[in-house]
Length: 346
Image 1 (cartoon, one colour):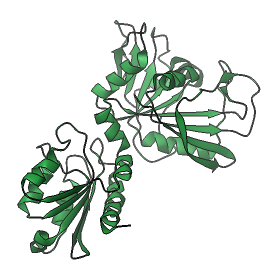
Image 2 (cartoon, helix red, strand yellow):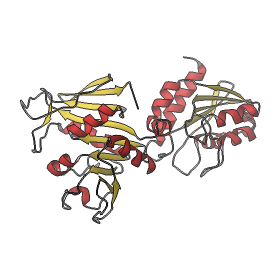
Image 3 (cartoon, helix red, strand yellow):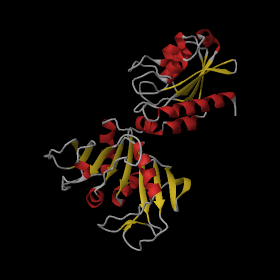
Image 4 (tube, one colour):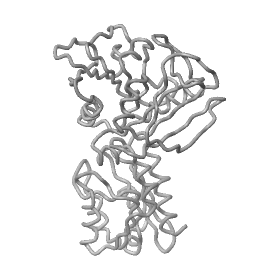
C-alpha cells in the first residue's frame, strides 16, 4: 500500500462517521499530512455545515504548516457556492500545494470543476486513489447524480424451495436476526416501497422500530386507490407517497399522490418521481411482481435475498435475478443471506 492509498483509506474511515447526518450530501473525509505526519483530520458531519476539508483545515494547530502539506480527500472538493463556500477556494487561499482525491464528484455543479480550479491555481492534483472504494462509500449519491434515479436495493425472504409466500396469506419466513438487519437496512434508505398486494395482505408499518434511525418515506403502488384507509401505511406517522392512475385523490394524513401511466412501464416513471423529490435511495421489499419488474427493467443496484432452511412446497415464486453477481453470502442464524450486485445497470 502506498502512502497516498494509506491516507485515502483513512479519509474513507473518517467519512463513515457522517453516515447518519450528512445526507443528502455525500460522506467525505479529509486528512492533512505534513512531512509524513498527520496534522489535521475532518469529515462532513452534517448537511448544511462545514465540509470535510473545512473541518480538517480548522483542526490544524499551526496554519503555517499548510503551505508544506498535502490534503487528502475521498471526494473531489466542491467548486460552487451552496450552503457553504467552495472548498477548492479554501484550499487555494490556504496555500496547500498538493491535493490527492479519491474520486470525482458527479454532481453537475462540481464534476471536475473543483479539480480544474485547483490545477488552474498551480496546485498539484492527483485523482483516482482507491477510486472504487471511494465510489462505493457514496454509491447512493453517485447513482442519483450519474443515472438520475435513486439507488435501488431489492430485498426479499424466500423458502428453501424458492417461494416468498403463500397466495393472499401473510407468511413469515425471516428469522428474528434477519428482521433486525432488515430494519437497519431501512434506516439506511430514504424511501421504502411495496406493492398493493403486500400492503393489503401484510399491512406493514415499514418503519425502523427494531433499529435506531429515521423511518424512510413509505411508497406504495395503488393503481385504483382501493387500499383501505385503516392500513398502517396511512396512519400519518411517516410521510407516504401513493403511486396511482387516479386524478381525483382522497385526502389522508401525511400522504401525497403521484400520477403514473400504467399503460407503459411504470418502473422508470416511479424512479423519476422519486428522483424529482430528491430521494437518493429506495428499498423495495415486495411483492414478487414488483421486485421482478425492477429486475426486468435493469433498474436495480443490489439485492439481499434471505433463504430459509424450511420449504413451503407451494405459493408465490421468488423473483429471478438477471445479470446478478454474488457479492457476499452470510449465515444469519441458520438462514442464508446472499447479496447480489447488478452488472447491467440502467
